[in-house]
Image (cartoon, rainbow, N blue to C red; front, side, top):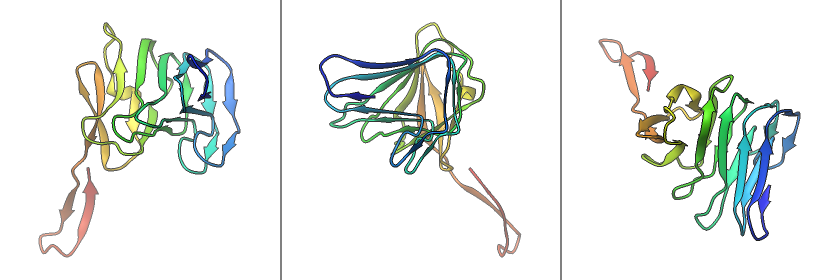
Length: 173
C-alpha cells in the first residue's frame, strides 16, 4: 500500500489470510509506505502468517519518508505472526489500538531505531494498555507503559560470573 495520490490510501483486513508471500525488501505480508500522501493499515481480524521479507517485517512493514509515516490501527483478535517492522527515523510509525483488542499471540515489533521514549503503540482513551499484546524482537530493547502509550525502553545487560570472574554463567537483560 503506497500513499502516492491525494487523500489517504487505506488497506483494511477484517478476515481472511495473508500467507506464503516473500518480499525482496520490507513487508512480506503487508508493506505500507508513506510516499506523498497518507497511508492507513487497519487490521481487526484474520491471519497474517508464514510470510518472509529479506530485510525486515515478515508480517508487516510501516515505512515513511520526510518524517511522515503510515499508521496502523488494530482491534479485534487478529493473528499476526512474524515481525512488524516500524521504520522509525525520528519519531516513527505508531500502532493505534482503536477498540477491544485480544490478539491470538503477542505481536513482535522490530524498530529501525527504537530510541528511548519513542512511542510505538497508543491505546485509544478508555482502553487499558496491555504490555502482553506486544513484544520487542530486539534483545536490547523493550517496551514500557507511559499513560496510554507503549514506548521503547533500553534494557540493561547484567552478567553473572563465578567468584574468580573467569566464567560467565548467564547474561540477562
